[in-house]
Image 1 (tube, one colour):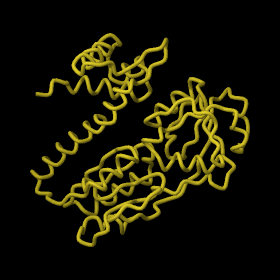
Image 2 (cartoon, one colour):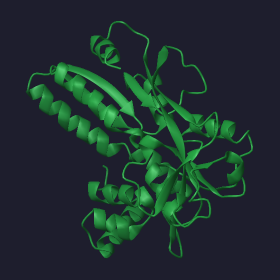
Image 3 (spheres, one colour):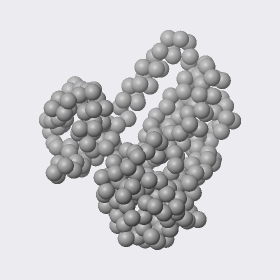
Image 4 (tube, one colour):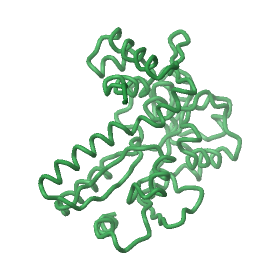
Length: 291
């Protein structure tokens, strides 16, 4: 029997957003002691520490990294299950399963989902927010019909096709007080002596390859590898280094950060939609037609 509560899981995932207990407690409308207690109970249930606390800095243990990888999709699975039950009750049997990288969720993608929902009211649009690596796993396993990725995968996957979705600029993200923050544009060579904060290669292998091309295979020293954009931005705010991210990942950026143009021929990100090579899925074909 599973003895991990949804509240414990919610607290764990919220702390992992920016690795800051005080911020997580505010977002959950909790005081910090109950939040810490939920985390301690979760660690006790699992039988190992999930976080390492070094002064004011917090990061995941190896066990914590693995637990995050396996658990962060659970809220989305429960939400999809609830929505599926409601739609079945309303007589909506068709279902299209589409994944996306949450950091790239912008107005254009939201508008696309809305147009499909309005034009196909008999079809349930089941959405999953997953890492790029996990999206590919779900596509290969047949648990998703299609997915939006920020970078075209390094390898071709049998049975899947990809198509360009949109292209956007990559930006240099710096603390506002950084010596380079007043520049209108920055060359990659100007960043070689700085510390890079980026997504882990396991989470976004194609994006790491993209960074390698931008820096001519000689990346700046990597200070931290994160599992998501909120963590990256929090570490940049804290002065741990700089990052390179697409426009759509920034959202309403913290005012203590600046976003500067990256001067490089490779400073464009071609986002793609990857899906099954099939003509039998009517809902999928209709969705592709809206791209």
